[in-house]
Length: 259
Image 1 (cartoon, helix red, strand yellow):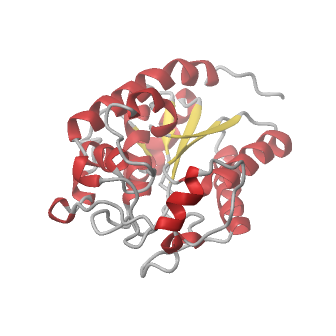
Image 2: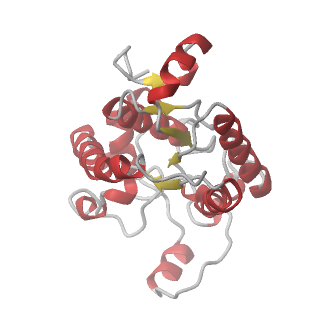
């Protein structure tokens, strides 16, 4: 684990007396959320939840002792990847219920602000539902972001050259090479084998979202060109995203909570 015993409150590595002692200082729970799904020939199944976990630990370290990083949620909404052997998926309703139950549990311990660090695009609609329900039903501040990706769009042009990216591509694998290199098969780095019809559809730039299985988009499960991935760029992306999110997090931790 990248925490390496640095000062970060990481729930799986704590005892209950340690959590009890830390609770008076904890202002926010950081909940890593990912998936267990295929990432082409070169990315392991833990790619999304490992990235979310490792970024969350860096964030928790920066916010110590005011943030508790919880156990990662390792399975998400991945039915579109299910034709690739090994992929696991939750129903959207199950996903929402699991995250709500985690928030309810944490609230019973006195934690009343929740920030979800997401590592998988397929989870995003569910996270919007979850955070809205936490806000409306529990009366607690709640937010989510797919990190570091949501905060580094301006940097992506430095490394992205492919017409279709976003999954096990040069950008994602660069970030993994920095955050969790054990999850990358460097000897198997391969460009995505994008299907012609998927490229043509993307080129039309219609404001339409069509449901597709992922093997209808790419033959080998990857997009972009992971052979161009760079750990150095991944480090820059992660550090930039961390720098950009911290002011928001510090403000979020002071959000008033209705009595």
